[in-house]
Length: 115
Image (cartoon, rainbow, N blue to C red):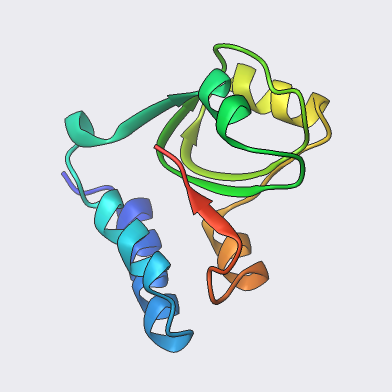
């Protein structure tokens, strides 16, 4: 069965890619269509190691709360664990939806895909 939320998200990402001439959104849409077994799982430890303060990241998969985050970041993820969300917010970071990500960063400039 197809997840209607995922279908809607992919459609929005593809439209944003065309409208804003931003290939990053098309790439994220392709990643969203992969089977569950091929989706990425990322821990906070990895995010903490590869980001710096105020980075904006997109996780095309699940973000888990293993580890800690020592600086504030803005994150958009297909799925995020409760513990990861809590740790990001406690560090002063933000968790935003894909729609917010597209509206704040229409060209995708400054957004990093991690995972």
